[in-house]
Length: 267
Image (cartoon, rainbow, N blue to C red; front, side, top):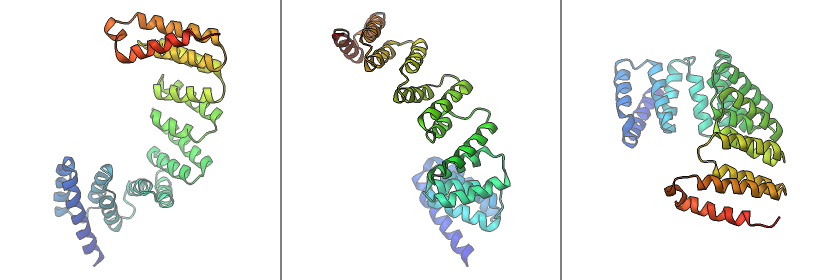
């Protein structure tokens, strides 16, 4: 009785989602046709569930995963898919359980390790989460900057900064990593390190005036007024070197006015 009811639920959810997401209709039609021909193929239910999950149709994804689990409980990728879904829907303990099973079956799967790291972090099991990130990073040729930012968020500030510098060494000068590292240097009071990073970013851009202004702001916050005004004057010089249409743009004009005020500030 249960399989028939579940099949009806899957069909009903599928019809609703297809109308809400016309861009996935072709893929859904293909899978539905294939399932009509081979209704006991668990991998097709898994694939359809993953398609629904990609478009955040959680009930349809869950219904398809349940059917796949009924047909083939140890189906490859199923535990990862169910763990990912549980994590997305806030069932973190269930996510961890599914992902524990996935990693037991495939200990070198970086996707499962990253997903479990996220679950462990949300369960406040930070050391275990960091261990999973570390294992995953050794298995990935080039972890994304976003993954490094995720991991850095679990560290205290000084260790997070070290993690981000490691990421920059591995991945290159990714702006999102530099910006987070700069914020940490400022929060830690490492003004000279922050200035060195700003100088690096300034040298790498075709529009240095904003970074020169940022340099001045850092120096001003450290009570280094003469150096701050020198940085502001450098920003003004960078603006003056721009084409006239950029010099006269509203944003640049506002920046120029602000720099004039700042350079006129008393020592």
